[in-house]
Image (cartoon, rainbow, N blue to C red; front, side, top):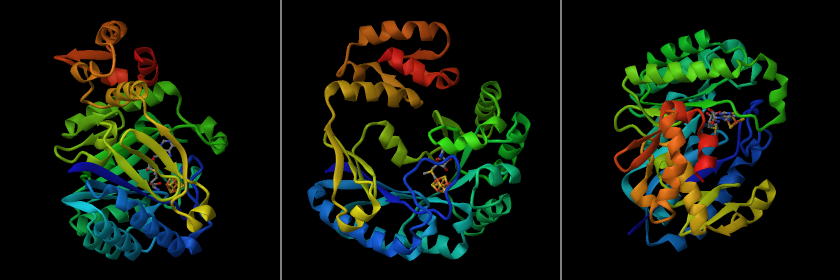
Length: 365
Ligand SMILES: C[S@@+](CC[C@H](N)C(=O)[O-])C[C@H]1O[C@@H](n2cnc3c(N)ncnc32)[C@H](O)[C@@H]1O
Ligand code: SF4
């Protein structure tokens, strides 16, 4: 049987954070039941094409999947299990926001089959959280972490953003030390990206590039000492706690997106679900931007995705898609400068290289 992962998009949030560029709405909560009905229709209709596939991982992302009634998440998982062949012990992740985590919800999600929780912390600083218009304060973050602890949740990760307003190297170090006391098994640290104009509202209050680099370098050392492996540019995990779902993206495995605006890549084709909310409710099977992934696109994506991970580029695998000699020649200057390393038959980015990935990837491609 062939493999497949499922990504399920829940496009609702309590409020919209100033830096966010995800497809999500704060004014459509009344339509959540209608949306879930459309999602269920999409699951039923699309599943018939994937009878020969075993589902390896399921990921509820958003938006804020923890915001909607947990019984609806349960219903979606039940439908998925009814219509797809879901592997026993399938990894099922849900993204949670601190203000919508409580022990009752955690119980329902787990009853439904959820195995991993990803908590969007972003910052532990009261003023920073307020400045970026997060719908929670630091107290709610600690409450959510306590709920995980009391509910004996084994696999949970925390998401942070580096480069937020008011953040300094020292305040960042304190936040990381505090979060480590809660013993997360997974941690994601992203540099603030500037896709939305609203960021101009606080851009002047953000730490500069040098300070952000200092944060990242310190973080790499600190998480290593805490026993985490740096398995992707922005992701760290304790042994065996890597997010299998995301690992499969980076390994170019097939995934099917379900829900508004979700992306899919299956059998060398990629497409997106439509991103118009009302149109999705009427017809959840509408598709946009369908395209064939040719050999060269696959090769470029291979370089880009693999360099993000600690697996790196396997020159043997690359040889099936492109010219290894050309790639090795282009890599040489970065090996000399310490941004790439050649280990056996693999080419990997160093932590110094992770900071310049975009430029290195472009040159290698
Ligand atoms: C789908 S998002 C949001 C999940 C959840 N609603 C939350 O806010 O915590 C997943 C993660 O992407 C990161 N993220 C979102 N916008 C970002 C941005 N502009 N720059 C960097 N990271 C961002 C955040 O760390 C967030 O937790
Ligand atoms: S809660 Fe998460 S998804 Fe919603 S607006 Fe904020 S960052 Fe974006």
